[in-house]
Length: 468
Image 1 (cartoon, rainbow, N blue to C red):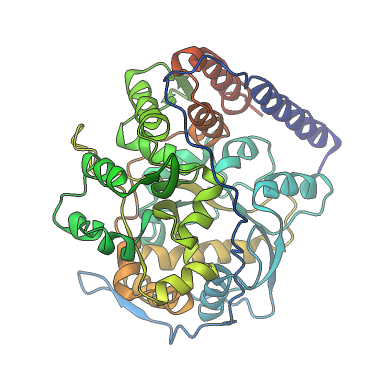
Image 2: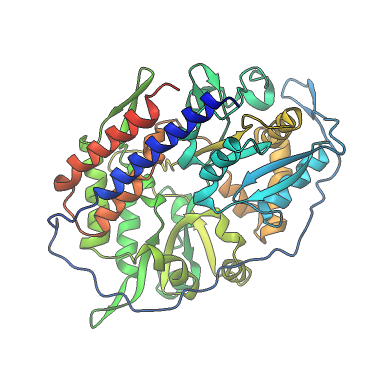
């Protein structure tokens, strides 16, 4: 890496941090939008969510020869990577179920061994930047959705445009999404779309309260937003102002889902850049719905309480990622037949389907990586089984074994998988957290919209529309 490149990246990092600092400084209280006030939260210790899997490998069987619909055989690609090792920077370590599953696939298809470099989830992007600047780049980086926009534009990724056959069977269905990982005509990361977000629910509570099972409503086409809201209210139990049971809890991605259901966006693609749409009616409607749920009907608990409350039975429904199946309390509850999950409800008011938000991510090869060929093999193998239905079945069965889920439940998780790309990098930035924080603190959206609009403009101008 040249000194000029290092200075350029350092300057861009400084600009990025300045933007984030400006956004943080702008969080000032404003006039409340409603007169209701939430009940005081009882103080409880968090429940330990640590899970150490007892499985260190999985047998995926023999390498298949797959036949297309027209009868043409498609032979699973093989790689001569015996003895090769790639270093992977990720928030995973070697003993998580995802890592075990991934390593098993690489071994099955002759891919490289993996050396895990593990960093906290929120610090992986900064860790990557520091490693590249120190000329100690990892071979692979698992790109997080939140930092994709910024680090794509900092000149630290290898150009994958000509390293992968984008017309091959294992990549062709992702071609419509390539513009989301393309910068200045170069494909800098290999796209993945994680749409495995569901509403988990306590089947025992539903049964005891005489409320119909959500998955049965979903199967009948009756799992609508109105029905969901009604059930949230019926499940919430208060006694002398103290909440004994909450109907619903969420993490920060719930706001993304609400925006999806209301067809709302904070920005839209405009030419080679993005345009700010924070003042649209759809955004206002989405914020109004969140405000009603949190501050008016008060069927939700605080975000930091949702996970332990659900595990302890004080919360009936929870919006969270599918990785919860890997935490001990949830694994135990599932083994006892207590919990299940259902896709997000349909917003019947807008005749939208249950369009869950996706998380844009992928794998990238940083500048300075020493094992580029092995890194490309990793990316191709890891993507191949996701795009091939026959292998997807094997993948699902392997994940069931690791996570103690039934095959039917995992099929529900994997269908549908891809969604129309209606989200932008801006909406996957920290702006989401600032807006949800504003709603949770009962602030008027009209009063803070101008502040957020300026913040979004800063992000667009400082990260997305700046040439490197």
